[in-house]
Length: 600
Image 1 (tube, rainbow, N blue to C red):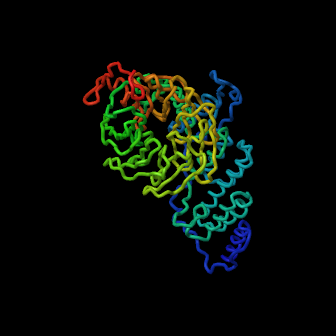
Image 2: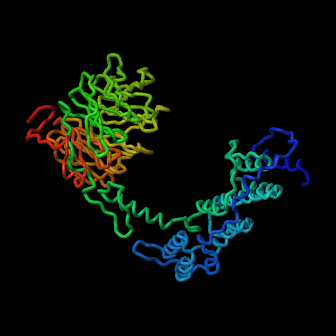
Image 3: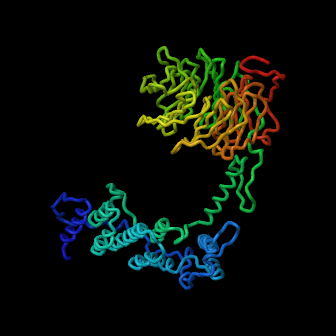
């Protein structure tokens, strides 16, 4: 081939082969050479003797006597154990120690064939590496094809970098193309020969293709290969981290990231990591406190009461809670509260009344949302903070923009008179109670529905922060944990709290929401370990039914509870609050037990 026109015709034919047609028969008047300046200066002969014991591995065959030997009580193969340790030594830069370790155990870090393959990649011996690829023990032909594609693509780019255009074209035509995989990428590679402005993933732009170092190519191949062929980087460290994670998950009191993790002792947390001591009592409400919720940033707490008011409390840096605004305007008791995504505004819903939107900074009511003669029973925000959702007494769900313009309405049996309504953080799902024993998950785009069916009547429910779980409170004094991420599944049941007549709410909380907390009609707060289901704490202090619990999302050691005794209790760690100070010190109820505003 001795003309640029011939070169174009070959490339053109290659593209036509993959595109299935001809778009342009006019050859360019001038071939544009790929700009190699962007590719030069990148090291391609990178070798990493500290990471691979090439000489030791290639000089010594595998020791067959160790292949089947088992060590420890868990059936660990000695060969795998030794190779993982060797990989850790090399990754730490201890190449001499690693080589001695291989010599002493008689077990090489890599098989001789794999070591040869690695060296061929680092040397740029592409033909040899393709040949070795078929000998290193990979049985899956699709993996071999994908690895060959990656290797030959590197060969192609390195030939372009050295301006060996005809050899690059030959590699494309006779080696890459016959693999018959990733045809879109093959078509893009042909453009690299003609165009100075490279394309990434088929999208034109100014971003240039950068030639990979061969050590990076090895890492890409390693991710593709089975771990029996090439041990993943940092495998021993990964195993140690997994063991630490399992220990933390098994620790029913783990509730803090503070402190260093030691490999010398097993992980263990004490009961003192759970907020179990009353550190402050808030007594500003004039009647039963029905609902409360911390803001997402943990700097505020909002509460509502049967006294027709809501209060915004401020949490200072020391965890001290003080009254910021009292929100007056509702004509009926306030059953629910919802913070805006940015925590700048708050919604309150009166029982079968209206929804009000308030400014957190000023305490001013910004808008009242209502729907004719219908009452509103619940409230929540869209994730972008631009819309307000509410359940109506006619069992439909309505959506307004912030100015009160009705944007949408889901008609039919979509809700009942339960003041819980949730949206997932991506805005895709609406979660609502549509019947006494059924929760509805509505896809907002497709309007398709999934259902959770309980055998008992639903009292309340809440959604986890990661949108994966629902916690459902039932009339039979059980809490049910449901997975809703992919398929709906009942995971766990929690028992112990008391509920006979009133609405009692529960919440997720603690570090990584590892705990479940619930109110109870026996005046106590109950806390379970979410994973194990074990009841780990029962908090005493209130003198009336505990209606609602909220765990500070930014402080896993701060909990709030609302009660019929007209108070809110803030709970913290015992060792941090052995002495109470200033305003909000512990107060006595003089032995009077409050329940629904009456005394017994």
